[in-house]
Image 1 (tube, rainbow, N blue to C red):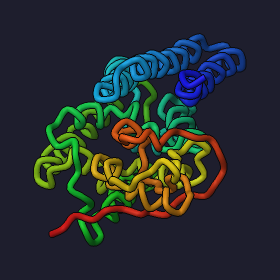
Image 2: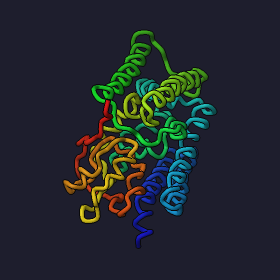
Image 3: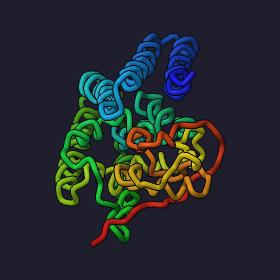
Image 4: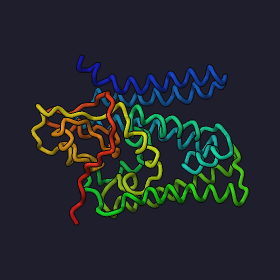
Length: 304
């Protein structure tokens, strides 16, 4: 029964993707949708299987397997070979043009409506930017940068949207589905992301610094993940307030504070990486399904 409970959240997410695969294929007649979502769901299943089997200290390898299987597929196959602009600008371009292209489908499912079910699991298990950032040496954060650093993501989001609106409404730019121009957008966008994210990680000694301060995708994710059915929950009877979960959380969430208040981890910064679950010596944490409204950002700030 214990193993079944461990598998249940992963199986639920995988099943959602399989159902989407069949429904999209049957409703459109496009076999690619069946392959696309079956591949993503199966990658999640494979990674979660490895994650479940491995001992606690090695479990991140299973999650990173899924990161590379899904993130690599999105970036290499859909991006470089299919010429889909999977960056946020591509989503805006296709949406304004009225094209139901890959990036519109992806953002709608994984980053707008998906988080109502599984929160920001995309960030922890599938992001093609994070799959490289997690290879950097600073896996334990020293805390959030104080002040308004977190507002930079909204600036980034606004700049991306403004560029698209200017090109479409002012300059008359028209997106070309599958065109070489979309590949250029993808290459340029990723070059900017990596050339910013990697130096930033070394400057603030935090692999996830880009996710916390600059990533524009979090504007979507944080909104809908407030209502996520899947969140981390702690058992206050087992918790000894040793602080291991908070010390190891890559997103600087003050997890013991939620446990003391008998609340699930309601912070929209949680990426469901489950590092807290694996580092808890008392096995006091686990994934749970329920309904509550998140957003209470109890975060640990870096001492300057």
